[in-house]
Image 1 (cartoon, rainbow, N blue to C red):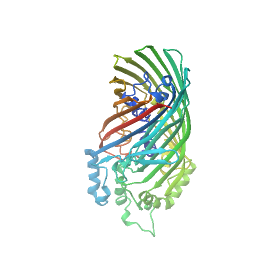
Image 2: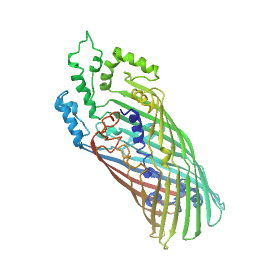
Image 3: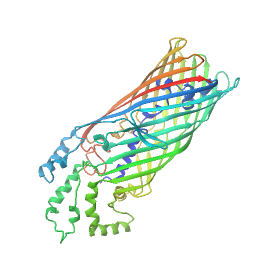
Image 4: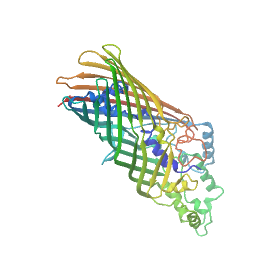
Amino acid sequence: MMTTIRIVATALAALLATPASAVLTDSLTIGNAKAISLGHAVTADPPGIDAIHFNPAGLADLKGRQSHLKVVAGTFAIDMAFGDYDPETAATVEGYRNQAYYDEGYYFNDALNSKSTTEGASLMLPVFGMTDVPILLAPLGGASYSPAGSDITFATNVYSPMMVGFYRAEDDPGRWIGQRMSFMQITYFSPSFAYQVNDEFSFGAAMTFNYGGVGFELPFRGGNPSIFGLGELQATTLDCANTDTGNPRPTDFLCGGTFTPYEELGYLAMEVETPMAIGFNVGLLWRPTSWLSFGMSYVAPIPMTLEGEFTWTSSDSWLGFMLPLAQSSLYGSLENLVQVLGYSLPDTSTVTEGKATLDIEMPELFNLGTSIQVTPEVKLNVDYKFSGWSSWQDLPLEFSKPINFLRLAEFVGESTRNALVFPLGLEDTWNWAVGMEYQWSDQLALRVGVEDRPTSLPSGGYTPLLPMGSGKLYGAGFSLKLEGGGVMDMGVAYFKNSLDMPSGTSPLGNDTDPLNFIYNPFFGTDIKTDLSVLLLEFSISQPF
């Protein structure tokens, strides 16, 4: 039988559905209008203060004292459509229904032939924790300084390499795959420098101080119609209709209650964070001629140990099933036996609260790029990029107290009562980006760009938890020079992808394995997902 590793592990995947699932998340919420409008093809044409992230060598272009104010806004929407049961699953459900062990309401599945959509953004914020907002919105910014006549530029910047999350309505059928999820990385201090070696060559480096936070809320249900077999067992083999409280039989503890695969069995909520994780970025920029430049940058992996709280709340249905079992003499004998073996059985705790710890490593990034001034008005940028998502092969999560279902997982050796390791199996990705800038006038430049953003999910590993397929990011924007030496940039970008998961193709979603009932909420149903991201970014840089 499948174990509860799927409960928490699935939740982890979902929140990382968000951040960890694909190159989709890389650099989207930095807040740089030039970068998104050029499809992030800026390694050899660094974008102002955000060169700290894209290529620190580009800071050498910032002279004097400059302030940089930015705003990033956006929406992150996941729509899901759930189909009917496949023929085999439909026949199984109908067979149990015809035996009339329960009334018709017992077989109600709110996700069957339904649609789901996210309501808005949920952000894991320092101090405030999980916070629901209608859209992603964040003011950011930084400052740079290069002394007169100096070849060195100093800078610092506030930006968010990852700012993703969502929440669903309380009755949305997609809540079984995640009611609320969020992942945040905020770089709040980034002391940096760039050195102009000569007219052709510069290099730069940055140390980054980062906040990391992860939060999720997940209602749990079984979803597997094989649970209907409990009703058949109670009505036939156990003859539960003829129990005698004065003269109980050894098996009567199994007659106390039951539950449907389609109702909530428990609710898991967790928030973990770290106030400081240190990373570094380096970059090189070479301009051999006035019309050609080459760039290279590297963002080092950032280890993070996130700590916080978790809460597991058992539902009335689960407690109604467990209570007669826990009160039986047979349960006590079994508990004594498994304790000798080093295990423990689930109990009747309504709420379990404690500490949670998650160890992750933000992936390394490596970028190569060139920028070519094709004509006096037209500039072409091309980038080729690497994202090291294979560092997320496994995600270890530890609890200070045992969770009921994790006690079951111990018996098959997939976790301990206080810890589990979720195998994500993500893969490294290489992707390209192309951007073009047209100098309309001395004051106005127009930009367009496209970026290929492949998924890092392994082949055959699609799931509604991580609806992050491959797709293209399209960007457009402009740059306007202001009086007094200031520059205003605005950019918009759009990304969309779709995934089709026929019944039985997603082990963490719609598997048809009759033993997969611990976490498989949409057993035997077709699932289609659509994910869309719309970003609007605005910035003003000016001397002071």
